[in-house]
Length: 218
Image 1 (cartoon, rainbow, N blue to C red):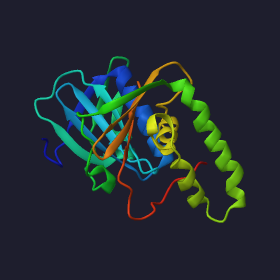
Image 2 (image 1 turned 90 degrees about the vertical axis):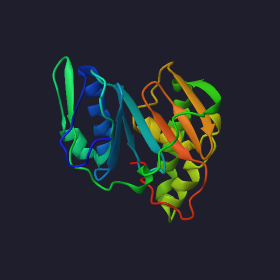
Image 3 (image 1 turned 120 degrees about the horizontal axis):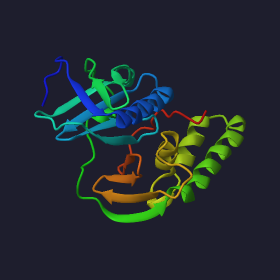
């Protein structure tokens, strides 16, 4: 693994670099103080983040050349975004200084061992997410604790047995769109996962001991 503090640049195809920049922009607009864990091995780089919905998000992108040494470092979302430069053919991600980051990024889901896949179509689940957002906006002004209302709503069971918070996070990150692309819900010990053609969202199946601070719909 690379040594923290040593300047490292990753080269991606130009289009993939623009996709990563767009993803980081979405994360930054949701949580300006957020962090992202960059893991690169072989010919691919992955970016894990912890949006304020008690989930983890993940996008994987190809590199232009295989790495001789792997990278696993946590940086700020803003720093990663500022480190991307691109032209029509190649994008460079210059890694900023590492940070401690969100504790939720300390333990990542396994990449293998997922089972019980349930397949669906992205556009088919969009109405459920949009209806929940509309319901929250309608009910929130009349309740004392809007955070408690959000927690109650996002724990509702949805596609493939996933809590609705997973679909909501995927919708906000642009992973779920109103089209016919395939989505899959799957499980492994301690985790559930939504897989889309644009990225993945994970949620732990063991509930926390305290109610988290949520970022509610704006």
